[in-house]
Length: 175
Image (cartoon, rainbow, N blue to C red; front, side, top):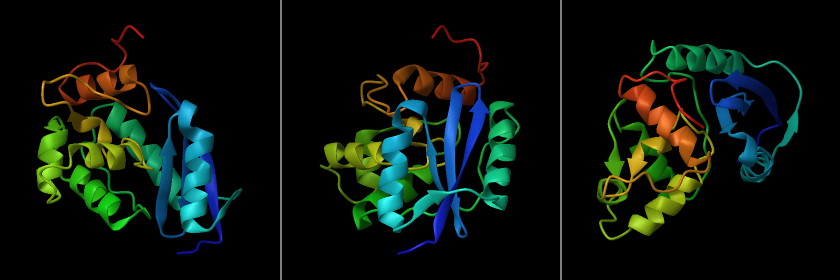
């Protein structure tokens, strides 16, 4: 797969500044500050594209949808996305999109959904490679025990996202 270049945009959110990237087909990156450069490089390699400047209707749509999401006016993103992972990663990312707003699945449930009932570690790894945070809701996956588990955007952000989706306020966290 090849794209000419990835247009990037910094988006200010209640969770900090996120870096978004888009190609003509859709959003290909939404990364938290600690992961931005590593994610941008990985997406660039997968899409055979370099980051560049320019305008993107997908980035503007993403900005609007993120604002609505954090204002609790949007439960499902409609902005087009483009991922390019292994076939297994793609199955996991597609399954993540099926987790309803306000609901969590365990890694075990996610593994079962993708046809790998003993593959909790593998789905955890694929979940961690998700290039489009929030839009592809990897934050909705928790440990079977109910504990949060890992999150590339840091656990406090995962906690805030889950609290937001369960009816809580975004800015009532103590991070």
